[in-house]
Amino acid sequence: MYSTVLLYGLAAVASASHSRFAWILFIALCCIINAKAALEEQMMKLSHEGYGAYCHGRQRFIPKVY
Image (cartoon, rainbow, N blue to C red):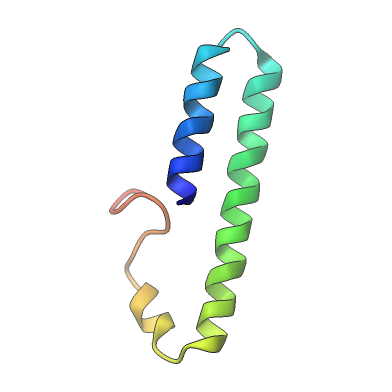
């Protein structure tokens, strides 16, 4: 879900590639989504016993990349 938002954001920035403001907003969006996903993962680890083991060795957004 978050990867889709980032891809749409990147597409929007690409269509407005001359706009520095669009790039700044996209970078801010990436930071916010990354922080939100990290917070959600911490909450899941506290709520579900095996979630930490499940996350070990897995990437957050793009498999084998990030």
